[in-house]
Image 1 (cartoon, rainbow, N blue to C red):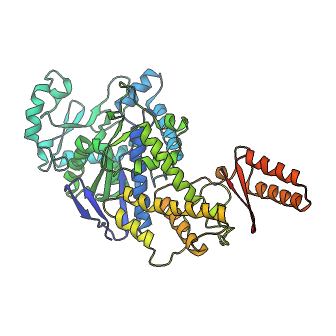
Image 2 (cartoon, helix red, strand yellow; image 1 turned 90 degrees about the vertical axis):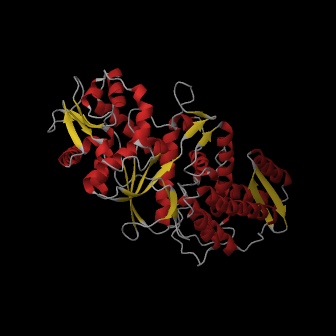
Image 3 (cartoon, rainbow, N blue to C red; image 1 turned 90 degrees about the horizontal axis):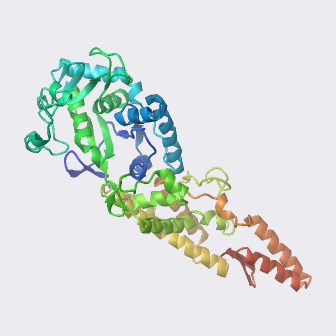
Amino acid sequence: MTLTLYNTLTRRQEPFETLVAGKVKMYYCGVTVYDYCHLGHARACIVWDVIRRYLQFIGYEVRYIQNFTDIDDKILNRACVEHSSMEAVADRFIKAYFEDMARLGIKEADEYPRATHTMNGIQRLIHELENKGFAYPSDGDVYYAVRQFAEYGKLSGRKLEDMQAGKSDRVNVDDPEYQRKKDPFDFALWKAAKPGEPAWESPWGAGRPGWHIECSAMVRDRLGETIDIHAGGADLIFPHHENEIAQSEAVTGKPLARYWLHNGMVKVDGEKMSKSLGNFTTIRELLDRGVDPMAVRLFVLTAQYRTPIDFTDEAIAAATNGWHTIKEGLLFGYQYGKKLGWDLGTGDWGLGTGNIPIPSTQYPVPNPDIERFQEVVNNDFNFPGGLTVLFELAKELRREGNILVHEGKTETSAEELQLQWQTLVTLAGVLGLEAEIEAETQTSNGLSDAEIEAKIQQRQEARKGKNFAESDRIRDELQAQGITLIDSRDGTRWHRN
């Protein structure tokens, strides 16, 4: 069951082999913080969150770095409109980012470097490129000399001669930046300060870095010259990731990353998401409409991570229904564990309030369900295939729960059901799917399981005293609150409607 990944760089699926056995260095190109995160960000962050979780699940120690781009024209434009500062805008939307990701259950990265906090590393890298003949200054700017890097285009598959043929009609020779370049394909590493803009002192004069050099410097500063996985959206393959390779590898002479992974884009009702089309949806807008965050996670995971995904009302409704099925399975142990005589302890499962964590229980080896899950997911992170295992477990637990409610016993042994539940909780945790316990153990009127049992005891006392009117009143009261009682020779059972 070797893990294999599709590598954008080689355009083929390859066995995953890390630089250091058992350890993964992973970098994700994060968000530019000028606005609230949208559905595209939700997909990317969920994908890389689950990939990180899965790598940890199969035994890797993962160091996961995600940057914030906090120097950008869009940030400056927003600051200008709001009569604010670039720093204030960036800080506001970084705070909003963490709020949105917490709601989606995204685990925090090990570190979140910011471009403004990496200025020394950025300038050092530009200086090295200049010394090696890959960069040149021009009127306060510094440009990367693309034609000096023989492997330029190896990630995207683009060739300079082909791009030149298509670009010739679009070049504005009167553009001041064009006039400062030695070649139209050269891109900025450092931009001279414009009046009123934030600027940093440098050997080339006051200015700010270009976008591409920021990530090259942050990768190098936090993870070293070569990393295992460089991740990002498919829209970053060119020019951003192509330029990162050119910058970093020109200096080090080593591969920037062993594996380049890219998630597919999000469409809305078949169209590209954009504000001009009126189909631009932020994460907080979606969740504030009442869509369950776990349904959003499930929606993302039902598609192979490299393929485009279409956000529709029907797709979210289907994901919501799917989540309800998995959630019923996750809550099975809390609802029926005591009746089945399970010894759940207190620390491993967190039964009471909050989320169900991944248990620390050691499973019998082999565990067929976990093996099936790993076998399918090891094929280029095939999480849709892995979800099939979760749905099978959840549906079986739901079936057994219904049998237990109506017949007072299960078809499967209590021990086997406990193993199935523990397996489901574990695999759901790998995918970041967590069910709230407290909310699911109360009706709209706030009756807890203990309160229902107390009502049933009162009814039994009434029946023993032949007070059948009171017995019927309690039964009808519970029925009105969505609780159905089932009397049998073995006693009274109940279930929520």
